[in-house]
Length: 117
Image (tube, rainbow, N blue to C red; front, top):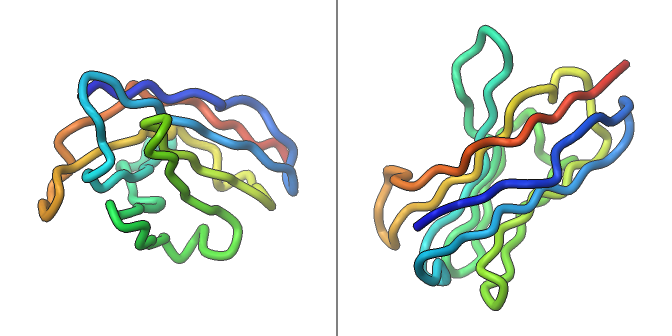
């Protein structure tokens, strides 16, 4: 599975961005998909996940502001980010894991999100 993230960029605090991650190589309809982020000088952290049957989970820091979704017909996972804060500035990575597995085995290359105050 190859993952290609896109949609990052510069936004003002309070603004919105939508990230997309397109999978190729095989269908990911039965995969769990997720978004993670890594800010400068910090470890990579969990942002959100969506299961094969559309169950979702969010980090407390983004709950109520970010929405993860998937379009299996397009083999793509999205992250809608609203009410952005400067603390959301990071490189965002998409990831995939096989059904029933815990570890994310497949990772995209990352897309930079910068939020100005």
